[in-house]
Image: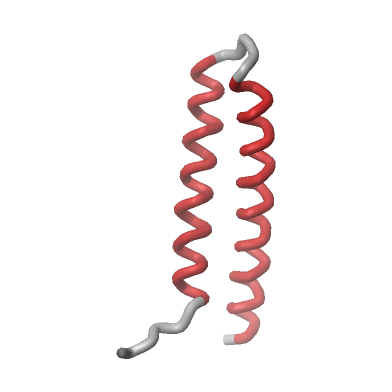
Length: 66
């Protein structure tokens, strides 16, 4: 259980890092003359990463029964 949690935390860190990197790349490319299809793909990848981060965070937080 602890090994799984550690692996999930490492993966979460990797995803957040990649999400930040993509944010930087997109911000730099957004103002320049760049292939719009490539920019759209980067933005889609960023959204997918956000979904994965949200899913992992929900798995790491224990369910609280009210």
